Amino acid sequence: MKASTASGSIRTSFSPTLTRRHYASYKANNRRTPMSRLYGSLHSRAHRCAWMLKELNLSFEHVATNFTDGSTHKPDFLKINPNGRVPAFVSDEVCLFESLAINLHLARRHPSDLSPATLVEEALVTQWSFWVVTEIEKPLLLAAANSILFDADKRNPSELKVALTKLGRPFSVLDRHLSEHAYLLGDRFTVADLNVAAVLTLARLGSLDLSEWPRLDEWLGSCLERPAAADWKTISFRVPRPETDLGMLAMFV
Image (tube, rainbow, N blue to C red; front, side):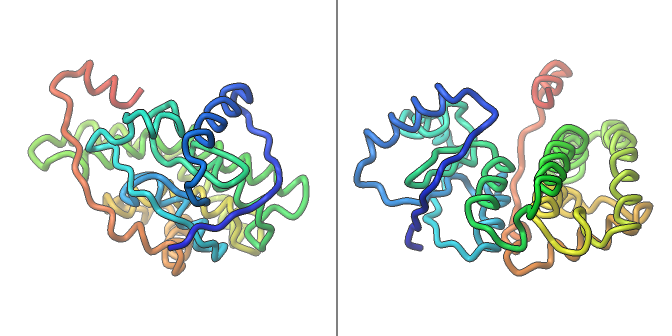
């Protein structure tokens, strides 16, 4: 696909000095590189950003950088994201990492029904995006590891039970909210729904039983059946289980 370009400005919550430095370095070394680009295998968190780009009907070049083969630690990629992680997004105006931040930028940069329409909606979009990372993502990763990501003989039912217990509270919070609202901000699908549902794809991939939270389950199904979301359905990979308890701790901290 051909890359698209955009103009404007963005303020970020991380170091502006670092952002300007690594973006300037990227541009200096890639003057003939077309924009926009999304870096990361679509089996990674990059699928969240691909979903947003497709919802907005934006053309982009996908660079299938993969954390499993070491390409995220190559010097050229580290000029884009010094953290050595995917996804990363580059346009003619900005170089960003963190999947949900990329989606929030795209929502603001390309106004649509997915975008916050007021300052209150912007605050709520940010709230739900932060919430899903702080309350759900880590225990959900542990649950997914012990239901799909680790080899079957390396999975630990006790760890899965701990993760599901931890998820019970935020799942109940979301289920109660959705008992009163069709979507997170009210009556329309927005980037808040996309960001939260994109993280929750692991629940579907791991075949987690969500019947205790029927509104959440129904809402998640409707979000993930949107045509632009289809990339999640092909996600399939394994990660090796660390050999020690300390290794497990390091993986999830």
